[in-house]
Figure (cartoon, one colour):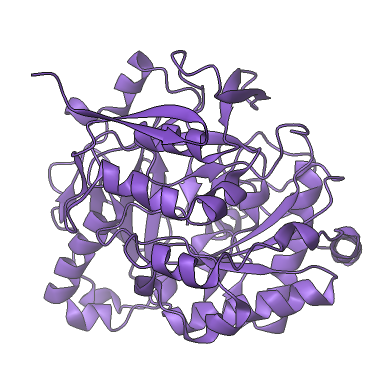
Length: 461
């Protein structure tokens, strides 16, 4: 018997949902068809979040618990009513990316296995000038949710000080997003420059709870990830369901809701009723278009007093005037004649350790290599249960959670910096709590070369 299909009439088009009964969320039991019905229930808001924007397809073909891959190139086999636009990447390659403009196209991409939606901050009619400034608040381990909410409210105030209106939403994962609609006048580099200035100003006003520091060893508090405004970066859009166990949603909010909001309150089950009751809190966003001139003036002031450009993501080309992409501790080490530090030993059975083949002056141990962040954190909890006395001596920034890039997937590594633990009390490197090999077996990201995935891209919370 052939697999069951369901054909829906959406926005004047017939859209086929293949394998509609396939379970996409094992914990809650939600199927692919449940996911489609969710997006139809909030279609006005979900389409508003992606309308006219090129979109990277983040495909979970085996559901939220399976591996995903990014597909920038629109599938060759697609309905003639699916719009695309050509984007060019720093690698020199180009791709026709999908552009969603109505609920039919929305359902079509969800049927491909797209649980969350990942549009670029540009319109298909002008791919060189973003019309969104995106503020991504990313907590370091140990930072609690109330602190993230406090930083979000401060971001709103700082945006207002510089003539911009902020629009808040939960990330649906652990963090928080604030968007500002801007005139499409500035390049990606200029928008990122404005975002760096904003992040530094938020840190200046609240250095105890917020940071603009790129290097994890320097972060304390909620990181304001300015690099989400670099070209080719995407963020999960408004009303996106996230691949969490409880199918949480990146939910747009009113500012008066932010002080008391809780991440777990917004899920695939609760958001449709909320949307039906209050509508879309972001409905008026397009009527609140602002200018970056004031933030760019602030960036000029920062430069005049000696601020350097903030570090770019490691896979970006070296930028003019950018400092060497070297961790501060390694930069300090490079000034000495002697080659200090050691290569930390690998976990039993592994060929490389916490720093690969690089030396480090920091006492690092590796805890987990995992396919998902949730699995990595589970491994950390097991380690913590055995080493509670050591854990109590660690600061939040001593817990290093890295999202590692593969060809078309990401995997996660957790390391601990034992600098605050007396040397005689430091636990030795043990076997990894989660020992995932991203280059082996069916999960080999290199197998993506046999799929039409396009350029790999990372999407963050």
